Amino acid sequence: MILSEKPAILSGTPIFNHPVPIARPALPRFDDMAEEFNRVLLSGDVTNGSKVKQFEKAAAAYLGVEHCVAVNSCTSGLLLTLRSLGIKGEVILPSFTFFATAHPVIWNGLTPVFVDCEPDTFNLNPAEVERLISEKTGAILAVHMYGNPAEMGQLEKIANKNKIPLILDAAHGFGSKYQGTLIGRYGSAEVFSLSPTKTVIACEGGLVATNDGVLARLLRAGRNYGDPGTYDPDLVGINARMSELHAIVALHSVRGVEEDVRQRNVIAQKYIERLSKLPGLTFQRILEGNRSSYKDFSILVDEREFGIGRDLLCHALKAEGIMTRRYFYPPVHRLKVYREYYEVCKDRLPYTDRISNSVLSLPIYQKLNAEVDGICSAIERIWRYLEEVKRKVGSQP
Ligand SMILES: *Cc1c(COP(=O)(O)O)cnc(C)c1O
Image (tube, rainbow, N blue to C red; front, side, top):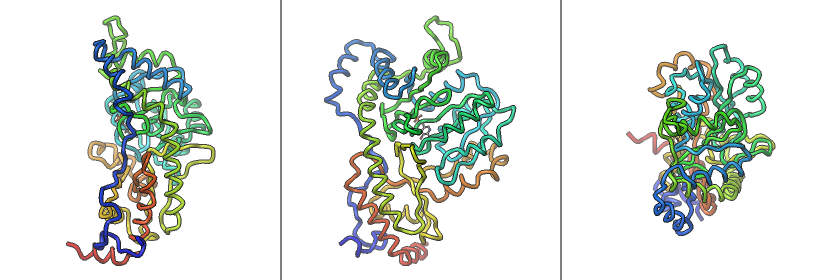
């Protein structure tokens, strides 16, 4: 019986002899795409062609939004969205996020204004956004953290009242629902990532969803160096085109998103059910009526209540063959390339620091099901042998 055994970090037998990765992309089978690949290669029309259009149409139909513009990454999608909307001055955004949320702000010569997140949802705090808005604010850039929908009602109200665009980094949000409505039609634009750890995958890719036809037209030009087809660019664009081969993968992937998100929710509930029995472990709050995509499943480890901290738990789980990640540590305002913004915001981000210092993302992906029990058992037995684990690690040089 696993439970009576010592954890692997104390020389017990690891629960998994093959490492369980943190994420595993649910990719379509080659055989299901082979004919389409072949047709594209034979046609010579290999980028930004009919497959990209077909994917954009399928995504727009699924999301219930007027326009979808496929690009080669979420980062380039955000970059082009900020550029196309002509944003000036400051952009309000969370620091508790992946740094690719913030980089496009810098690339556009804009100033990031980092705002704290909420302690329970880990999303941008609307009251703090309102407090920090000034005449210099050019846009609000919110994130659906791990797929948990940002507080769209309040954020849209604040953006409308101040007549500034609201842009969503929806990298985690494909398949998420805010009050029953799929993420993708909120704000001025929502920008998805289709890279391998996300819920819809193109291998590499991004997608901008918007109901603004003018913006969509500029984005289409923008991804092609700004050229709308006249050889006289409408804006200083970049090459952010999606290839036809990537579009085929994305097209197959988007058909599976409902099932993917359904399974992730089942896994998340299993984790919550078992781990909530241990002291000092808490979970992201998904508000009533919302659905998270659970692109990631992250727990907070309270060192005092649980007995050991996040980093030691991560270390002990690795010995069990369980890969975890500290998404997102350090927070953006503490990264060296954001040094010049640190002083002004360091004292107003208490929850960002607290969450970032105690968060641990556990493996989650379709077909993880069988392993969830083993992962929970590992955490339970590490907790049961806390004192020995601490002593052992404390005695190491
Ligand atoms: C993955 C991710 C991105 C970047 O997506 P790419 O498609 O790799 O550019 C941006 N923001 C967040 C929050 C992400 O997790």
